[in-house]
Amino acid sequence: MSKLHKTIALIQTGKPFNHLSGMLPFIGGFLVTYEERTSSWLHIVITFITFLFFYSAVYRMNEVFDIERDKQDPVRNHRPLAQGLVRKKDVILLAVTIGVSSTILLTLIDSRILIWLLLLVLLNFFYVTILKNFMYIDFLLMSTSHIGKFFVGVLATTTMRLTLEESIIGLFFYAIVAVLQCNKKIGLLLYHQHAVEPGKNHPSLKVLKKIRFFLLLLAIYTLLISTTSILLPAMIFLSSLVFFIVLLELHDGFRTAFFSYQKWFSKL
Image (cartoon, rainbow, N blue to C red; front, side, top):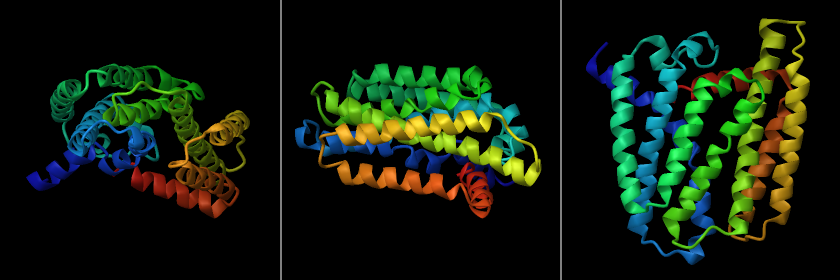
């Protein structure tokens, strides 16, 4: 393999496109507090870019801890580290270097962010070492990382204290992400049930569908009690999109296509 291909594979271990899509809560935090903005645009942009690097380090460490599990997973088994396209020690070295330097820079930008960085690191550590062994609480707890991303977006924009309204919107982002994560698990089980293990019923499906239903109710509730106007169209759009995805799950062809999409997008 050429140096160029190795470099590309090493970059892919940080899942840059997944990473960018996961920054929507940060952008939401910025938009919610825009009218009370006390930070300069340069300050916000630098914080955003540095936070991107920080989370790419977190993703890489997740890849290292998950390497054996990814090799057995039908969605993640083609990732660069699972395929052996990059060395584990190279990924660890890159993750530690980026993680430490970005943490120091973010702390210098605003020391209030440090507590959220530590919580995000601890949450991801427990996720890859313990929580992934539990069918239901893994995605429920891991989705709280998006609340942290939202609050970092708020702190990057204003020096004011977090308000109840901002906490409600943070909870909305949690519910939306948790629904999508739950739906991924349901889709994977249904795919196996129809394509890999036909006729086999998965008892976890009923539980996951009940959890998804309550998460949808939480998303609707936080949407209804939110008083913000600037994010309301985006929140309605996200809610509608999630409902649309959930409804499409009823179609066998969509499940197969969605599984293929997950396998492709998980590498990016």
